[in-house]
Amino acid sequence: MYNILMHLYELVVIIYSFFNKKVKKMWDGERIAVRTLREKVDPNAEYIWFHAASLGEFEQGRPLIEQIRHDHPEYKILLTFFSPSGYEVRKNYEGADIVTYLPIDTVINARRFLRAVRPVMAFFIKYEFWYNYLHILRHRHVPVYSVSSIFRPSQVFFQWYGRSYGHVLRCFTRFYVQNNESRELLHGIGIDDVEVVGDTRFDRVIQIKEAAKQLPIVEAFTAGSRNGAAPERVFVAGSSWPPDEEIFITYFNRHRNWKLIIAPHVVSDNHLRQIMAMVKDRKVVRYTQTTPEEAATADFLIIDCYGLLSSIYRYGSVAYVGGGFGVGIHNVLEAAVWNIPVIFGPNNKRFDEAQGLLAVKGGYEIQTADDFDNIMSQLDSDPQMLAKSGREAGKYVEQLAGATRKILASINSKANEQLVKK
Image (tube, rainbow, N blue to C red):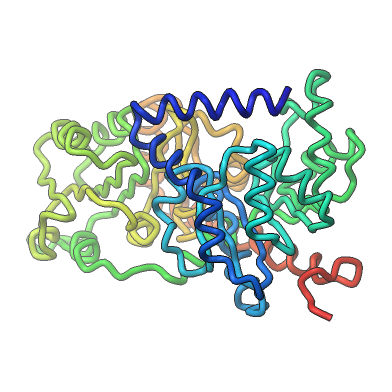
């Protein structure tokens, strides 16, 4: 049944690729993936394979990729993506020797792909459970690890109708899961090669913080004071969507003792015009169209490009992370690592990091504009609360870092020596 579904999915992708540019990029990349491997694979080298569905999963696996590359330069790295949003952004990633798409998981594709590269070890990040690839790897006795994986009772593996497909989990050598619930769920279906190590994203955001960019325009904007007045506090809204923006822009139109930086999730002319139309009686500038001198006198700064948000959080007094009024919040850890409180919308229950921030009072959930007003009023009027909340957010990230080190220690242990050449 699984293989029938994969062939049907492949047919749908082919048809849809005629009408959607993103799908066409994916399909074109998958078609040439094996050819790319045959051209680029060094037959005398040994490859460690990392697979990430998209950009978010890649960022989770990145600390592990870079640490292995540093500690074991004798291996080459193969990195694959399923989604164009990952591949197109990281196709030139210098941490890997080969970057390509992963063809759809049919038996033929999996055999051709694995004959072309023959990895000595494989890492699948978070939610990747490709039946044919995994069974062939197990048949070849290739160690396979699931990294930063997280399981929930609602997943197909734990339902009566998913027991057959659940056998795919037995193809993994070991699971490095984020929490105890995941370990218990796996134990309930007879899988005990499991270790709770946490989430490698905590390691990644610390890496990002250490490599943060200096941004002269943002520095001028946040340091600028008009008429000799003290610099205002700075609110950074990251990965925002229209429902988020309606709430916080309305608030800061009224409260003029704050400066506002908006880095929307979608940077398009239409969305930027919508944001600017919501601003009332405040000076607003766009990052790519301003100067440090002009930014210093502005009230709102709109980041109309990508790649800067993780560095911008450093300039904030409070952060807002968008998506909580839609499919789910974006990366709250990128903000929390800078020791600032983080506010987010109600769709956060599936995100352990959000729940953790709420528990230590380093994060705040809002469901309405009134909730936002109340929280901001408290943070604005109580400097001690603001400072303590920020410290708790930063401490939460620091205390849960270290998953990368734990994974490598486990793999390099006496019982599991695959990374250490004899």
